[in-house]
Length: 157
Image (cartoon, rainbow, N blue to C red):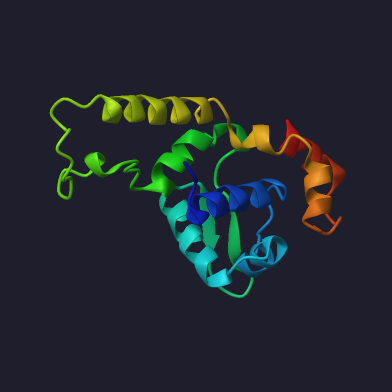
């Protein structure tokens, strides 16, 4: 199983914002930090806004910022929304399934259980767990050191 770029970018965007607590982050800066498409990231930001995980601010000083505390953003819940269609095999889609084994096959059951286990593990993590080394992460993203030390320390707690 491989996560979509969309889900990966969603988690990266949340991490970026968590490293700049209370600050407005520009989508352009996030895209540049990760070397990803700004256009694609805008779609991710729209979804994160609909999930009420970020606030989107329009206008000259606009951008995004976390709408929730990093401890309250459960990664498994984020991925359940951003991954969308998780048909791991043909038999998961009733409309297009042509597998003749469907009535007696246990493969779909095993895959369903494995997928639930995957999400169960990720629901044990919050965004705060992923930013426990904020100074190291900020350095890797080349974030400006203008954030007060207390803000980065608070992001880690």
